[in-house]
Image (cartoon, rainbow over all chains, first blue to last red; front, side):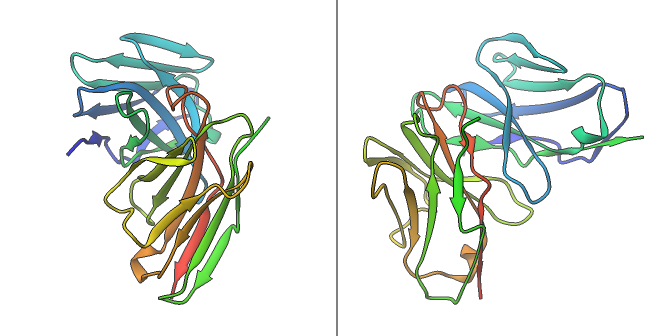
Length: 112
Length: 114
């Protein structure tokens, strides 16, 4: 069973702090990874993608990938109350080039 | 900014009835997907569709489910005889390059089976 694992949280961080969200995956054939943000009752919104080992930065977001450890993370700098949501990690096996396998998500709460 | 649209936003049906969920993918995308999310659970893949045929389907996508692209813009999911356990949010997604650039999700249809 190919799984993506996340701590369900909630992860509580004060406004302005760095939020660190983590994800592990079991399928070594996974080559592309995505972070989605999902507000309650809404659909997943793509915020970051990463394919290569190392860091990828986009504004306040940094995605990190370590394929040897099968580990993906998302850092959110200067966290805002509007960042409060569930963050979904997803893996794509480009051999199938089809389905995303999602984790259960980590709920982030940014407190004032 | 182009987006995926879905109708209806909420569908209530009786067990055993057929439902059709509709999606309009992003216009220049070629890969289409259906996912579902039961309340409180993870997003689960149902089916992917490319070049007018199913490219992959999950164990959930049994004979009760079918997909169709009836014209150049719509992409539909049909559930032939709904069960109580089909109650979920159904998300349509599309991507331009076999998903490697990410899949973009529509707002979803909440299906309630009574």
